[in-house]
Length: 64
Image (cartoon, rainbow, N blue to C red; front, side, top):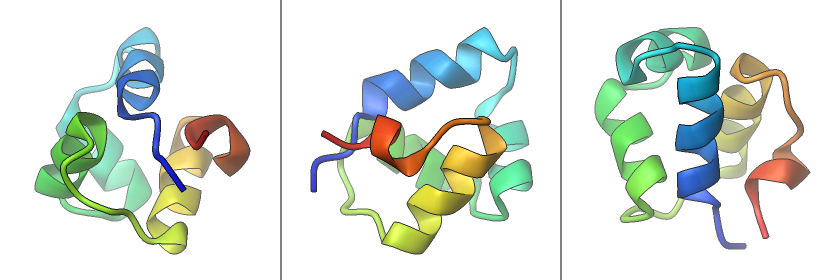
């Protein structure tokens, strides 16, 4: 399962959120948000669900 890090970043910016704000909404660390956006860390399904919910999208939209 490949995470679309650049798409997550695009959604975050379109919603005018900082990485810190997305982290707080997703209940994950800011460094995890950064790593997910850069694609340098494999991401647990639960983390993706939290990010998807915070960005008002589906998990399917975040992977491909």
